[in-house]
Amino acid sequence: MATTHAMSTSDHPAENLGAQFLAVRRMTEELCADISAEDAMLQSMPDASPVKWHLAHTTWFFETFLLTPNLPGYRSPNPAFRDLFNSYYNAVGAQPQRDRRGLFSRPSLEQVRDYRTHVDRDMGKLLESPEDRLRDAILLGIHHEQQHQELIVTDFKHALWSSPLRPAWRRALKQPSAVSHPPSAKELGWIEFKQKEAMVGYAGNGFCFDNELPRHRVALEPFAVASRLVTNGEYLAFIEDGGYRRPELWLSDAWKIVQAEQWSAPLYWERNRTGFEGEWSRYSVHGFRAIADDTATPVTHVSYYEADAYARWAGFRLPTEAEWELAAHLQASFSGDGEGTFLDSATLEPQPTKGPQFFGECWQWTESAYLPYPGYQPMAGAFGEYNGKFMINQMVLRGASCATPKSHARASYRNFFPPASRWQYSGIRLAR
Ligand SMILES: [Fe+2]
Image (cartoon, rainbow, N blue to C red):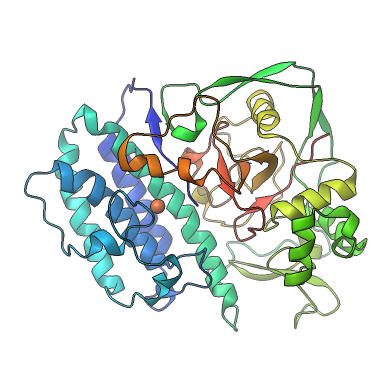
């Protein structure tokens, strides 16, 4: 994911940067605690990175942007890490080819864990009495690590699925509900809006990335958004209606990929797998599971192209990001009531939750291209490379997924991926 950078309007009552730092670092460790050195090296495709690389790169961020320039006498355990774990910051220096991160057998996972400990210890010194001028960079590092927590889940899931044995990562937290009584989805309703305009973009005193600013006015026509996400059961009806074989439903670029990649279902879906003869099942971090047991769960791992084709088949469209943001502000009961499924739950797969599902479960494709807001200013220096340079050939997703830390979700958040991407927890909310 490319994403980030902090812009913060500063006014930070009772903010404890040290505690926030420790919490996010600990969460990453816990997430990866059961991943072996062999598994932590896997890179299944150029877009995905090994877990070991994520553990090192998030640490590199704090070392490069905070410790090296600001902690007198700081010494890196290995100066070669400055280039080795640089992702895409040309202002910092060279970086290895992205698709070769799976070749880093050195440093070992143990050495990467030592690197984390080393940086955490020295960050502790910086955080004892953090200078105000460092606050934005520290917050950025914290939110950056949260983004990588989500990528650890999605990249590692893809890596395990790519192995011939298709092993599960985690044991299921609870037994699937009785096959004879899968939960049913509530009826799809519509939330109507008559507003002629909306204010879009972050407003508040907390953290946001630069791409959420400036807040600005957007003109609207009357619209409605669906009261919940599209489910596996509904998406199955699209498949069974020949959705993947009907060119009139697909954008030109999309149809080329459907043909070339022989797409016939979302990523991770499989038909006639041993043990699931005559039916569809899907791979999850807990192993395979029959779609028939999961018909009320939001469909995920669909590309923008599939979301768009599904919406056309259903007679509707996807929301714009402005429509989505207005709806989420006015309708979502996103008040920490625990309705959605986030990374914090450790379930790591979407659930058939009740409620409007604006946050949790999966990101929602919008029909908006990822572009700068009017008057957008990238952050100064190397941080300017965080978001701005990716504003081409990508579509915006809104919401938050079952792999997003809950404290990372907000209505103005702009996630973005190329339209053919399917390995994130990306799903569909309809609009009309
Ligand atoms: Fe990063």
